[in-house]
Image (cartoon, rainbow, N blue to C red; front, top):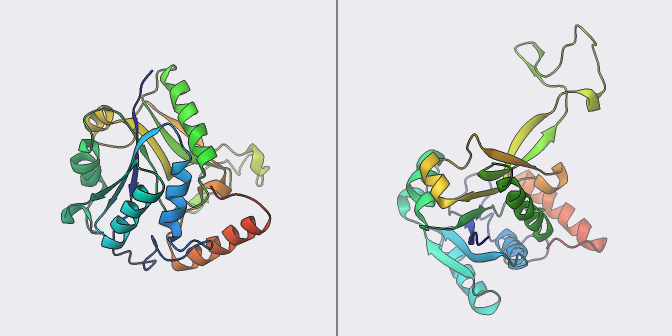
Length: 238
């Protein structure tokens, strides 16, 4: 089975919540989250290409340098201005831009803001996707299993406290959070669905420690400290 995996790494300019988050130093790497993610993807041998889509000249220059010095599968792709601003809807970004990046093949979409999604996890996700295809699924989405006491409108959302006020958390029915760390889908399916998830998507479970995402400045510093601590313990981020 030749699936033609195409890595896709969006990294637009102008983050409003975490300034220069893509390329400021992180975990001792001068190239920051972008360098870390490219080094992780570099270890995933089944990717035919790794597209870095950005409207940030610094990101594009770094991607070109990485392609020249480390991995020639990396392609620096300048993103049109209309798809490089925060006001752009994700729906239009997917349907009008991403779904048409390639005529054929399978997108492997991830983000620089998931520093602990490693090459091993990516390889496991591809294995899970290929198994899912044999079971009738058409795509894969990473998700985090949540078993916590969730409330909405003044009452429990995911359990019945009239039967038992405080059941054990492991007995709560799981709720799945789409964590945006990994999407795998044929471009043809994405064009047909106009989305990155379908009613035939399978969930790829990820632990919270691997799926943590950087959205805020405090999270950037916290995850930098966690990354440094893991390195000090001899653990690889790659």
